[in-house]
Length: 238
Ligand code: SAM
Figure 1 (tube, protein in one colour):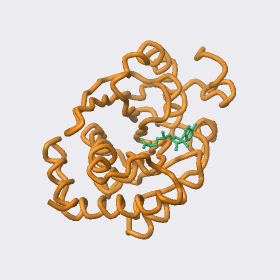
Figure 2 (figure 1 turned 120 degrees about the vertical axis):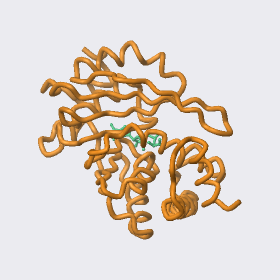
Figure 3 (figure 1 turned 90 degrees about the horizontal axis):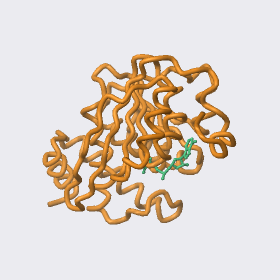
Figure 4 (figure 1 turned 90 degrees about the vertical axis):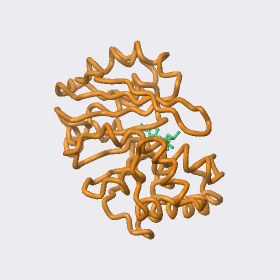
């Protein structure tokens, strides 16, 4: 089986319908990223089978939870483009913005997307807590997704100010998410969010359990959030 077939088959096992064109594009993205990864380190996963499962399929586990009418989707701390790039390939009608504090990584994924013709993408270089204070971005996205960036409490402070009221925030978490729930849940409430679901996703070969935390933005975020990076790091969530 080639990689395009492997990805389609892996999607089927997880209930994700990937067509051949989408699979080709994701595999092309993987191949180009792995070549560039030798110069600029963006992922420690270099085995293609592992990449298909832990980057491509894992990114797509949140697909079915994204509201059908979400047009503007932001991936906070996208790194090598996950989950943003696979989502952009699967949701051509939506505009996917990928944000990262590290310009080098962002430029790399921007170049690969341009090269292979992924057009429904935007790139924002900078820190989420700074964009969250900027009226041009604050309360403006239909949906925010984020994987492997920070604990739920901190992540919520970075992401929820950027979600518009009525929109959603989807946090992709590891199996230790329970340790983050107490602080996270309190912060989410203060920041204008409400947890509406916690979904487990079992990845295929590795028996890895990943968890998707679904949060609706039910109220505007109080103006004092997000705090500056220094304060977020030093002081507990008030
Ligand atoms: N989401 C990708 C994934 O799951 O493969 C990358 C995860 S990587 C461990 C975390 C990324 O978040 C890094 O690329 C880092 O630069 C970015 N990041 C961390 N804090 C950030 C912030 N406050 N604003 C924007 N990006 C941030």
